[in-house]
Figure (cartoon, rainbow, N blue to C red):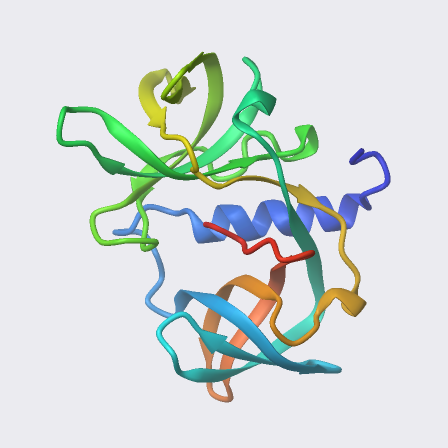
Length: 205
């Protein structure tokens, strides 16, 4: 279903996920994430109400890229898939997933690694290849590998699972959820790529 995604879009989104997923200690101070819903869109300006409740005006850079997230399921996760999983440490040991992003094959390797993430306090993001996927009555567990390491992550029932899908500027409607890796600029937040939710889907990362 991703054969029609333009190579430039895939490269742009790979840059988005790579830039959004650098190690916290290496992350440039001027980069940050914006999560929220669209208030208005016009030309190169996107007004977003953030999850914190404030409203920000985001400037869209020349040549900015756009894609959407679409619902998927735990049963869609197969060995060999490249995934991005935000997770929290579990009381019983190991990690429990907060969300799962299944990358299209063309984006395999984007931001590979495991590092701190800002979805919730103490959360981490792991971009890695699925070594095995085990389903059970209480959800599933995946073992993922990255840079020669392995990590086992439980996926509780109800965990949001999404994948990347095409989008157009017509999808930038008021109320649509967005995830933006922005840069701080003199004029305010500057974005090169935007992930938007369609049909009520909210980018969970």
